[in-house]
Every structure is written in C-alpha cells, then in structure tokens.
Image (cartoon, rainbow, N blue to C red):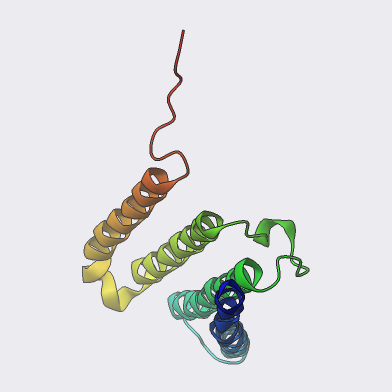
Length: 160
C-alpha cells in the first residue's frame, strides 16, 4: 500500500506541465503584445498614456505567466524531482516556500494592474476603488504570509 500511495504523487505531473505550458503561452502573448505596442508607438501617433496602459497590460500577462511558471516548477520540484535545474531563487523546499514565492509575484501583479488603472484616463473614476482594493489585498496577503509562516505568527524570545 505505501508503494501505491507513493506513486500517486505523479498525479501532479499533469497540472505542473499544464501550468508551465500556460506560462509559456502567456509570456509569448505578452511579448507579442509588447512588440505591437512598440511598433504602434514608432509608426503612428500613439498617445503616451495609451502606450503606458498597453505596455502594462503586456507586462501583466507576462507576470501572470511567471506565476504559472513558479507554480508549475514548484509542484514538479515538490512532488516529482527535487533536482531539476532552476535558479536558486526558484528553488522550492516545501509548500510554505512555494506560497511565499507566489505571494510575491501576486503583489507585483496587483501593483501593475493598479498602475494601469491609475494612468488610464478612461478609468480615472475607478482609481480610488482600485487603490483601496489593491491595498487591502496586499495587506491581507502580508498578514496571511506572516500568520502562516513556520513557527506560527510573531517570533518571541523566551527566557532572560
């Protein structure tokens, strides 16, 4: 029975590869969109604010691709093969480590989305709502990371 249970860890292979494929798709689409924005800015009378919004949209897709890549690598590394060649910053030792990496990338995406709304003239009335929502989400993620870290909450020193 332990061997059968041990083999079930390979069920994570499909979602890990699917995440990596999705990541590559988003990164390619974001890069193509970035190329289109650069082309439009050079060839036509593309307004600066429109360029900023389109660049941030492309960056958003690339960052979301990064999230999927981190998830895919992390799942693969945790369940299948802990010796895959990835940069040191992408090494995942446990689920808490994966969670921390994901929170960092999600905060970056939140910032990009907020800046996109901030510079978009057509969405000026939404800036306050997005700012409050973004701030609340970042605070909630930080609180979650702090409360769920190993050792559970604040570090205290015992003894004299």
